Length: 412
Image (cartoon, rainbow, N blue to C red; front, side, top):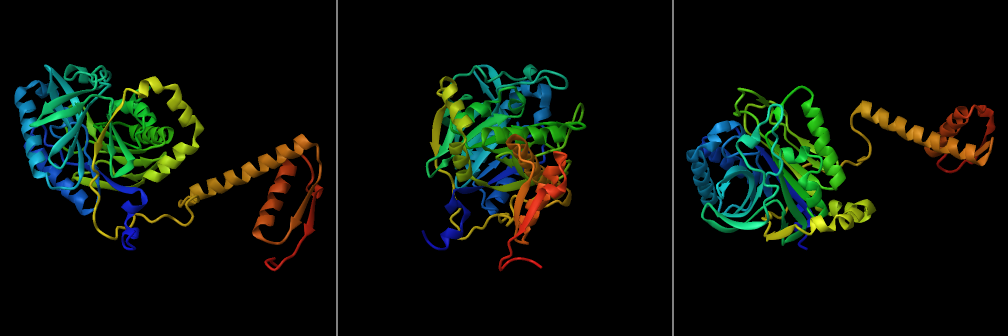
């Protein structure tokens, strides 16, 4: 490896991803394409390999009965055609949302665009039709749609269906799966099966409205799905420009990795924005290899995951020699940065040690402890733990026998 390429994050099974939050112009696809183009170029400037847009980003989510108008559906296809033409030479994978008409049915879809071609279309499986939602009025579910090949926007042989994965031939550790908003909120999200089938990164195109307390629940939901599936989860949500006739929209977008939110957008922004993060693909591979439950689940549900088919593609990788991480790893990666969280973590560590020692004393029937004290931090902590363990068992501190063992590193 060229020594300068060594300092490029892509040389170490890392990729940079972007989650876009454009200003929406309801039912004006060409104007939305302009906003998409701006954010695509911004993602490229930041050396991202892929960018994810919100649900129905080409039209806007809250078009309601306008989705029944052929004029809007045809304008959407024309807008996507123009974007395909404009991005032929751009080295970036684009994931956006649009209504797609197929066999006299309308589907809420996620499209993957790569250098002038559509390499996949994934329909939404779960259409909410409760409380403030009535998507089944406008769209058909893709749940029963078999994997097939269709033509759209002058592109032929496009994979269509919910059982497609997309794997980078030049970075095999990247296998991408897509789902759309409510899919994540279902009891069995499509991404669960996709991850068991090999997906290492999941992109969710969403239009999740704002309500009191929902942001915390949404954050927890994404974190848990990322943790449970041992995956990176990219969540793009619609914001400013959507209709507020019935709902409000906060554009709450985030990126999670193995259960940790590593990048999160501010809510209620009035401008377009871009969220960036560096994803560690090797970590996902290693964690899954060491997790026997994940491996067992793959075996138990083999009949379901065998339905998935893989579409190969060439991942656009920035050619710059040096590309450092957006956020260099912290030296104390296991220590929280916030003071209150740091105190809670230290208290938890202390209590775990006390509990373990107290249980050991109880099970062994011992009443006394002998501890070698060097005067260093380790033996000091051990002494504190021992005193507390004795106290929990209602034994006096005098049952701890300290033996001084001074050494070159001992304190005074």
